[in-house]
Length: 295
Image 1: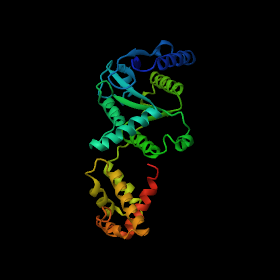
Image 2: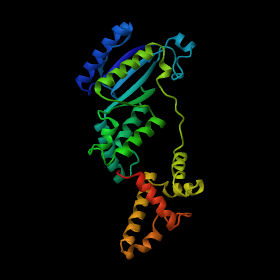
Image 3: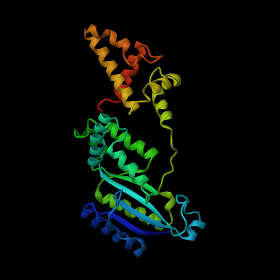
Image 4: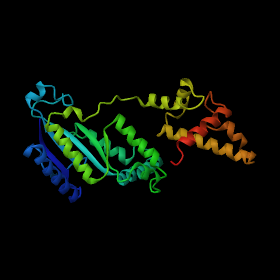
């Protein structure tokens, strides 16, 4: 197999292009791959920030090297599209547009839309997300800039990696360039089929049930009733969490002497679900609010 093009989007900073060229030139000498290691060039990409186009020879097909490109014929191009983001850009896209999405009722935020459009692009046979994270995990979790949304955002990245496309976290732009260079090396060395971790897609309904079943006093039947109660919401789990917080707030108000809220305990959305009484509603709500504390 051969790399026909390695393109960097024209909107990417010059520093990225220059650094990637330097890294590849250095790796050319160390690996002996020579000019097979294509130097990146500028291009106008409809989606993503980098595009690697790979061609397969007839021998590649005979040797089964095309397991991720069975729809192709020899000499047709297989496109790998990479979206590169810094952690601050990624979080900003996700958080700002997430608020906008909630206000408009739209199910997707800008971060997800970019990933979706990239995967739907005709040149994209396989996509991946590179997130440059200059913070160590401990720093990220204690940095006040990310404090309010860090847990749900990182969970979102993990969910994307499990169900849609690989998410690779690098520490810097230099590490991103090294990763792309190593990816090209593996392709040229015939390890094309090893850089995409096979994943089993899990139905979101089953994942919600599994999560709900981990709550105290919640079995599979009750978990299904909870899910069905929120299934029409744009963000079902977030709506469930909101109902839990509202219930807990009412209970706290009553415990502090505001008896006008007492009727609200029985009439809360949480208690309206068959199988949830005011006693286990408090336990469930308290557990969920501890899970989502800080979001």
